[in-house]
Length: 275
Image (tube, rainbow, N blue to C red; front, side, top):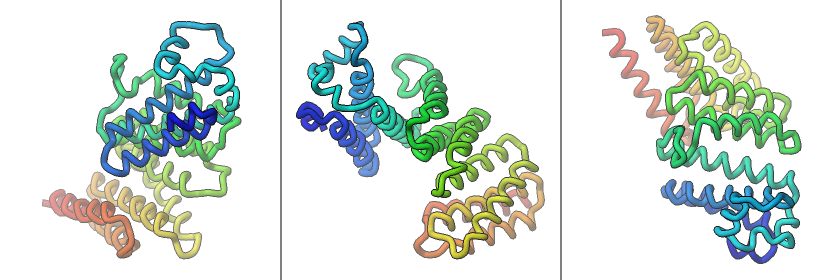
C-alpha cells in the first residue's frame, strides 16, 4: 500500500491499506487491523491538508510520510474521493474497536473519543457528495458499537441518520440492519410498545418479498427474537416461546450459527424466567 501511494497513486494506496485492515481483522488480528486503519486515516488527513498553510499538524504528517505533502502526488486525488475513503477507513476502525471491546473514551490515547464519533456522525449527514448507502453502512457500524457498549440512547442517533440515508436506496439490506438494531435499542430502553410495533412492521416487510435470501432469513430471525425478548420482559411467556419457535424455524443449515446459538440461549432464559 505504501509503495503504491509513493509511486503516485494515492487513492489506490489508501484503498490497499483499508483492504489490508479488513484482511487482518478477518484473520483474527484486530489490533493490527486497527493500526492499518489509523495509517489510512493519517494518509487521508495529510492529503486533506493540501493547499493549506504549513502548521504543526502538516509537519507531523510530513514526518510520518515525507512524500505525502508533495503536490504532485496528493493533487491526483479529489476531495470527493478522499471523503469516501475517510468514511471507509473510519468505519473499519469502528468495527475493529468493537471487535476488541475497547469502547469510546475521552483521553488522547483512546482509540475512539466521544468528540470524534459525534463529529463523524455529523459528517455522515453532511457529506452529500458521498454515496448515501456508504454513509448509511457507516452509521450502522457506529450504532452497533454503542449497542455493544449498552449505550442504547446514544445508538439511536446514528440509527436514525442511517435509516434516513438508506430509505431511498434500492439495496434494502442496510436499512433492514438499521431497523433491527433500532428495535433492540427500543427494547433495551424499555420502550416495549414502540419496539413491538417496529419489529412487527419489519417482520411483514421481510416476509412480503417472496422467498428470503440467507441474510434476510437471519434478519427475520433476529427480529422475531427481539419480539420474544419483549414478551419475556412483559412476562408473556407463551407468546415469547411462539416467537422463538418462529425465529428458529426460519433458519436453515446454511444460516448463521451464531444466531442459532443465540436462540437456544433465549430458550434457556425463557425457561429460567418461568421458574
